[in-house]
Amino acid sequence: MLFASLTKFNQNKVLDMKINSLEDESDIATAAVRELCKSFIENARINTVLYVENDAIWSKAPNSPPVLIKKYLESTLS
Image (cartoon, rainbow, N blue to C red; front, side, top):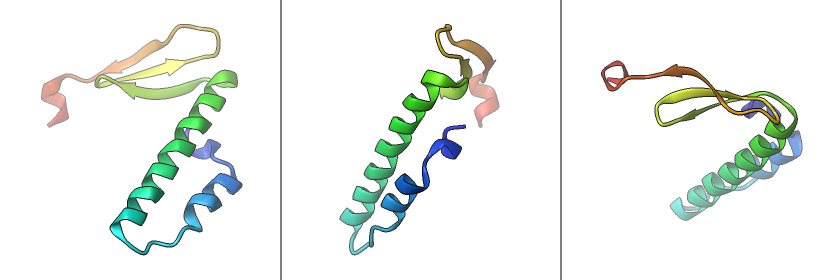
C-alpha cells in the first residue's frame, strides 16, 4: 500500500540525509511526508488504496467514489 509504494530511490534520498540538529530532523520529516504524499497520489491513480479520514477507514479505487470500510466511534479510540 502507501509505504510499499515508495521507490528505493525515494527511500534512500530521505534516509541518506544526516541529522545534525533538530531542524535537520524536521527537514527529514518534511521530505518524507512529501514523498509519501506524492507516492500515495501516484499509486491511487492506478490501484485501490486505503486511507484514514475523520476517524474512518476508506477504500478508494481509481475512477470510483470512496467506500467506507469502518467508522470508529470516540469511545473506541481511548
